[in-house]
Image 1 (cartoon, rainbow, N blue to C red):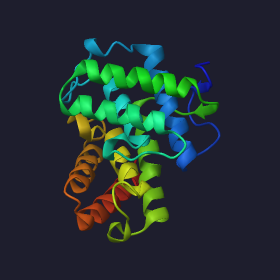
Image 2 (image 1 turned 90 degrees about the vertical axis):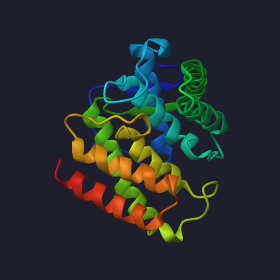
Image 3 (image 1 turned 180 degrees about the vertical axis):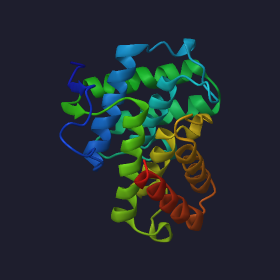
Image 4 (image 1 turned 60 degrees about the vertical axis):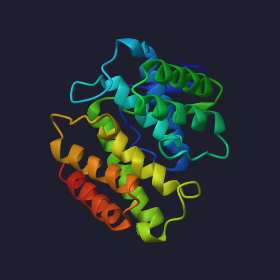
Length: 213
């Protein structure tokens, strides 16, 4: 038990991950619980590169799922969005103290929620959530050319979250998933340059790679 969050480490026994908006927050809080149960001392982590701490990848992923990767504020979870933004700002400045503060605020925000979250926290589980989230973006939002602005459209931070779950914000290539990691980097780059054509192609590539996992 983690405040209001119930975390299942046994996997998604109830079926595919829930990648709805509520499901994304539940998974973000499950990631926060996973980090808290393992080693929440950010100062001991390697932040960037292939040897980056897996918990760092989980931390940036939770921040992005709450909108922090593109400064998107979720109407009902502003506290988590602010904490997610702080995490990303800390990563961009290589400021471990700022990442720690954002993580602590995120953890406290989840603790105040009544969320029942089941999710597999392994690399494979995070990859699967990212795969299903990519498919959700394609189905729910259509072509990137039709998306609204960064502050208005969920699709932007959802795509960034796919990249985050695949290691893109911290420059990490997952040894067992090199193609997925490369596709995540392409998505992340496409959002950074607002390249809608590259976004559509990147999402197609992710979905294709995911079908072969």
